[in-house]
Image (cartoon, rainbow, N blue to C red; front, side):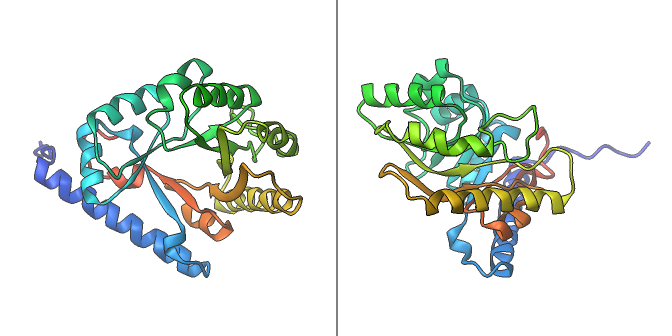
Length: 247
């Protein structure tokens, strides 16, 4: 019976995460250059939902300054454990209205403003606490029934309503590619989001609405997203390859 491979030691795990981070940074840079873009124009959000706080710290030590969590509870707990002055936390998953109050003091950017009711709740809490919250409007660009987000044809009306909320500053759009489909289909979804953004921008935007950010692309399709115009890519599994306990 062959011997079982031992779990990586803390030093080996740190080295592995650091190497994964370097490879992702290089791959994102290569994709940007191939698309005729400046690599510095793209933010890599390290999606830490796959690992515990200790392993997340290794990613921060490797140089990642933007971390994304899908569940508000995980965001709260990790942000309480990992206190780095230059760290920015992103909520990339669905946010229920009853979790808004605990989320706002922690988060730098909410990627998932997926209803006007949620926007109202975020604004009310932001106003009560005297802050302005940054967010992205989530668009169900693929039409998948299981996904959250506005239908593309509903985004304009949503932005018009959200523009009346001065404590919520929309800075762009977020979307995910269809769950079923190849990379060519993913790129079409990403291009559709960029074209939607361009059409909306051409109409003129209220003062607290900016569509400069496009959050799209994950570990398996970030190159296609960058080619289509992504400014934020959300990468998780590639950063933790070879780490015991990652999922």
